[in-house]
Image (cartoon, rainbow, N blue to C red; front, side, top):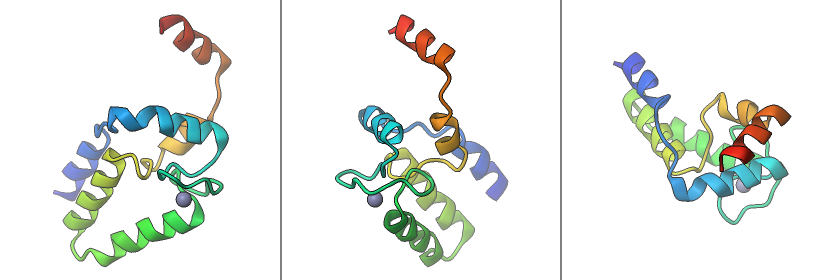
Length: 103
Ligand SMILES: [Zn+2]
């Protein structure tokens, strides 16, 4: 059950309206939480917001509730999936150019 949820999480799409803001925040290395401009620390968040997110996880009792909470936050663009910060920050001039040409 948990495993299935984890797999599903990988396909969660961030709300389109937040995607641009998130990319800009990542490029500037600041927190992706709206209205916050503290330096990015982990999962796309600053230290304070990452702590709040983690305490939100801890507060939920079952693994299902924890997974649902995490999934919702990723979908709302409040936190990045665990691999995403690194992926998005690794700049690749070839991919950048390809993206530019496609848009
Ligand atoms: Zn923050």
